[in-house]
Image 1 (cartoon, each protein chain N blue to C red):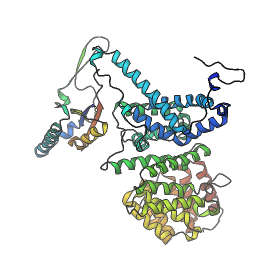
Image 2: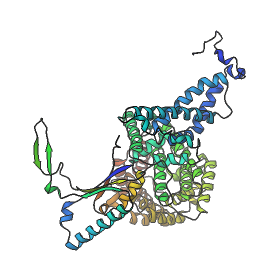
Image 3: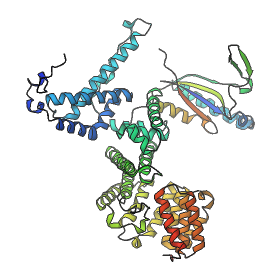
Image 4: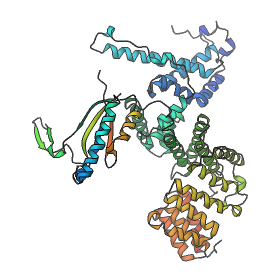
Length: 443
Length: 116
């Protein structure tokens, strides 16, 4: 059955077909076609297979991987099909159904009862169409199900929807590979065994469940944006991954404003990626960032996403945060930032997220709008809850510096330095403390 | 799928209730159980006597030892269970969310291993 290799390296049966020219082996074209399917269609194909496999993600992944392997060989021989993604789905689907039938038969054989009396049901997948538009959304909601722990949701979403490998995820979150692998294995098992459904939640549950999905996506982004460790390349890729996943969610739920708000928020932040870190590796504060290095195209995209969200007239925490990030990103100079508006947005955000961190940001905005005294008064009220947070002390230090209170500023910088983990932030704080101790006057 | 909902609560807290609170809690459970039974999705349910009445049996080195008290001393104790048959975990979570035990205690949802 194995085709004989000829001296010219072609398979015998490849020579009889109409696809001689393709069989002449543009191996690069075949690889490129496969890479393209993997990059653009993998998540959608996998999402359909997971439904057919009744939530058995491993079976679905195996079938997809086998089909991709088979495609490599078949396409070299027969040429690249017109719809490569559909070809792979058909092939993967057939493999999956064969495997499910086998499993079913084995299970039936091991039963003590007379097998003939048992209904040997064909997998119900047979009756269903190959893909359903909601499949990818089902996959996202299932991976972000609240019955899974947050780290498991994040890892599983990146693995199945994002297509990252386990080592890549482990590296991004700075944990040992076996830890990540086990997290993913356990999550997949729980989905299968505990009966986590493969559905898009109904109207009643959608708002809460969507929040859960957005939380996962934002966490992925933040890990990339402000991780305390990990190399820059991996972190940037994580940000892009989060943006792409959020954009997919937006496409799938176009009439929900908060995914659009989150997308805009990520884009406003990510647009500043090249201005955030100086040549010395230190974090550059917003007001000192070279604005010409910001990605204006991405800022424009963020702006249009935010506008699309806001016309739906259902406010939410991501839209508010995006609006704040947008005012920063769109101010022509730091001095022209509309701080009064930012203060108002933080006040609105406090209704949704009454957390000390939002209060801290509100206080900083207030100090910019009305003067450092106002900010310090607000910060005093937060001293108990935030005394272990380096940015609290950094904010205090900055306000004292602007008021020309050298000693208070120095001791606050030292308190911040004692708590900071991220080396780029440490660099920045060291520089500031040095400036202040050197008698550099406040701004 | 079949799930067991394990009801956990503080026996100390329960014992400290006034008779009126006690009566209210009982009523809440009765109407919850009635609603669950009326849905046709309840297979079994029971309230357990407090852990002061329990007996634990082990055979660590092959010989049987009987001890007074629960398997583990915990802050909250297993006080009862429901067995339900519903399509998915989401349905089980929806039932658990209605259970009076979640205010002050907790409900743990465990899938039952299907009978072969």
